[in-house]
Image (cartoon, rainbow, N blue to C red; front, side, top):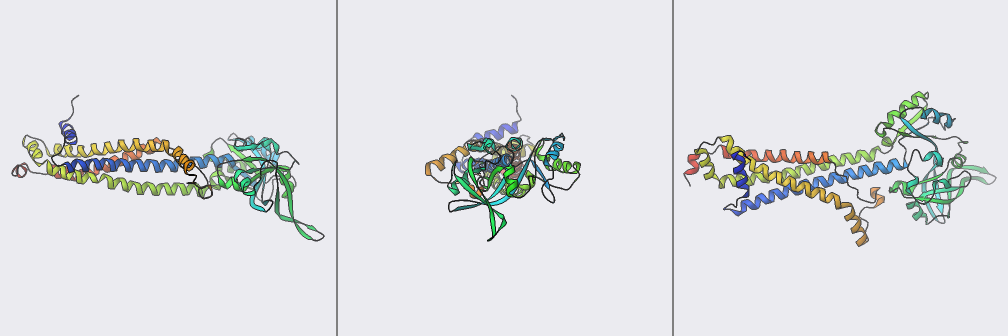
Length: 415
């Protein structure tokens, strides 16, 4: 295939061994620097993407897409409201809940927990609690059986297992002849779940809704409805529209609002890292400047000969800009392959290191999630490659213009 002679010369300069081996060494370092910088940026963004996706999956597994709760107290008739909710085209499921705070105890161990009373049959439509059970069943939460589902981290903290007893102590008390006594109830552990998020595994328990209504004094009424919607990214607007259709007087929330700080923190940190690592790419790319400056100095005679036989200044510019761009393209290709390869093996590698050395690299107490998920997005990989190419091309302009301005007579005088 025919190709412009400028590209042929650029490829020849790239392949040929220079009389000054240092130039070839600097070219290789430029390629490696760009490649490593691109790979690091791909890996870092993939970790952020994986963490965000995993957090969203686990949050939606335990929390509903949206909720509506009574503004001034429990819902008067949650069954009617549920039926009216299901008439909305954007709502696929609704389930009542009663929620409150309590202190869980087993022996001398204590832990503060959020208590959620649910209807097991309806709860399946709005959360994924059942697949997360590592022991027991959701059906065990039957009315007046006083069974409870707890997280794996809470079971470890209280040192309990299936069949053991734990006591829930409520801040609300009742008057006795000897004074005010705290309200309490003993429950049997009938299931243990592992959501993979320390916040839920350590601080959330489930009981049947009627028992929860009795404990928290709602007189059989639900605090609100948990909703599953067709578009999770539009859950807030769907719940707001439902509240309006029901006549108002409800407090509306959704999964993004409840966990907004976590997701905003991820996005902010991701943006900061992108800027910082883009500057690293820029530093690596501008190594090409020093490489091309030395190449231009080394090839003064060739430049003069090309100009003498009729090569235009723009052709000389194209030769050296093409050489620098080729260095950048090779570095980008190396970086993309290296980055995607690291992303593919990073999670199992971390798990293997933790297993071999019996260490906990990612503490669930600090990071909410105990593993290191990754998710490479092709659109971001393409954006990184394009940004790096733009920086690389910009880095070639100064030495290329310098070569194009050289006068043949001055260069040949010293040859």
